[in-house]
Image (cartoon, rainbow, N blue to C red; front, side, top):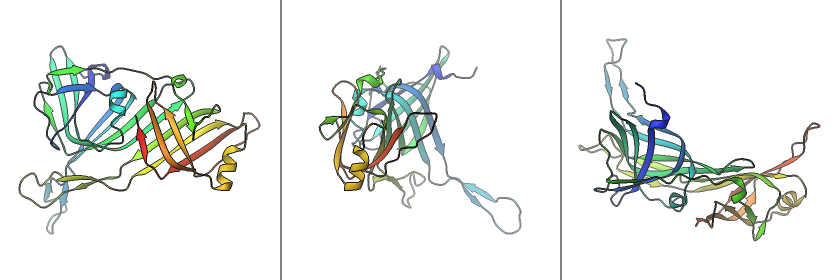
Length: 273
């Protein structure tokens, strides 16, 4: 029988040594998972030669282990979003007859997107890049703790500098670490990356308002810089310093109310606490 999404769960543990799962780990849930997309790409090298119309060899190249998770976030994991920690991530597919698990090791956050809209809950999508992935028939952890949660829109907020904005209907922010896989020529595990290094960081997002004032147009015209703070439930928040609106627009249609869309870019830093 095929597995269903209701038979799958995702857990993680922080690694002390990059690419190595700690012994007897206590595995933690990331939140309430909406979807998970594990991808393993062997980056096959296709070799051709004269004398044949077909391939002569298919050799494995640099293994690419990628993982995208869409979820309602829990505070425990949100605290790590700006840090370049490495994780082992286990996706467990479980039936009464047994389990099948994928273990991704050496995972770091490439980028994370947080979104919240009126009449919905705060959602995040995190793209991980891993060093490798393997198959298990027994669970790797000694304990498993679920952190199922949901933060509705009315438990969030948006502040500009110190002022809470009361016109916001949607917000989104993106933290992009621009990780780079670095392989080297070597005999042992040469098909796996040796380093996973962060490059420049991009901080951006968008805020959508009910169009009631000209404040955002005024900011854009006068080149104003400000901070943005996004409530993430409870006392948790993400604060972006050095923000400016990328552009400000008010699409106007005869049959609808006017919304103001204001994408932003931040020079940083960003903090999540």
